[in-house]
Length: 318
Image (tube, rainbow, N blue to C red; front, side):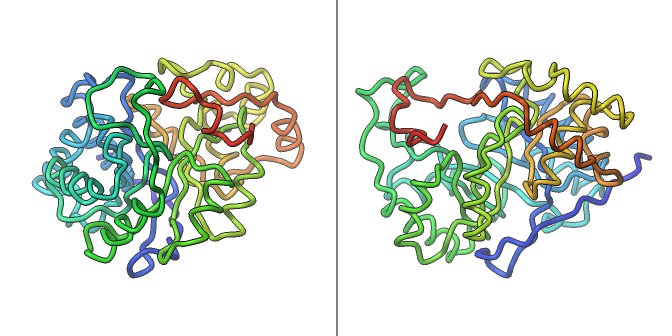
């Protein structure tokens, strides 16, 4: 029997009933949409045995169905007592990023997951793409006006209807958040963005903290092995030295660093040993010297975005 790690959680202040979100999520973003459902399903079951309770998916990942099957199986064999023990995040894709498509898209995700509600629903990117099966990265011709206010109003409606307990965004800059916060009734609970020792996002983190928005870091290890990823983080000499000094892996140093920054994390691994190691970050600390060394690491954004022309995507916040 696997020993289960108890993962700390944070309270989402804008959520229904102040729901708690575990600080580490098991990510299900596939390198391609053809990732095997069976592989995802068995990895999710293994993760539940180890103590993971937060699972991050998206309509775009193609992993909602396998995640839903794994949840049903976990309930069937008694790994969890009820659905309420889990925290499930999904996301609205660019081709559904229109006011009239928000509710149908969420309902479709729930149907695929075979769930009655999500714990968190995010706008995946602050971009709208004409509905259709376009090749990526998307060219300018298929990108259309993103009605943020109209879309957010429908996101708020989804929370009021109880279809999701909280709502948030992903890949939003300070400028885009400022625009959003100027008209919201329900503020975003979360902004999920790339953060790792090679891309600190200090300004954005400080802004979100001041506004009560929780940051979730994706690509916390630099997305090594993914088509968009880099080996810069996991192959960093600085991080390797810190890891050796603590008797930890480089991945554990990255995740501990994020945790000490007050950031929550979505990390993906389908390897049983690494799944376990990724949870072993709560009973030790980095030193002040470690933090100073990590602060010196060269900063490079890995995730460029799903569109060809990214001029307006990052608002010059590089």
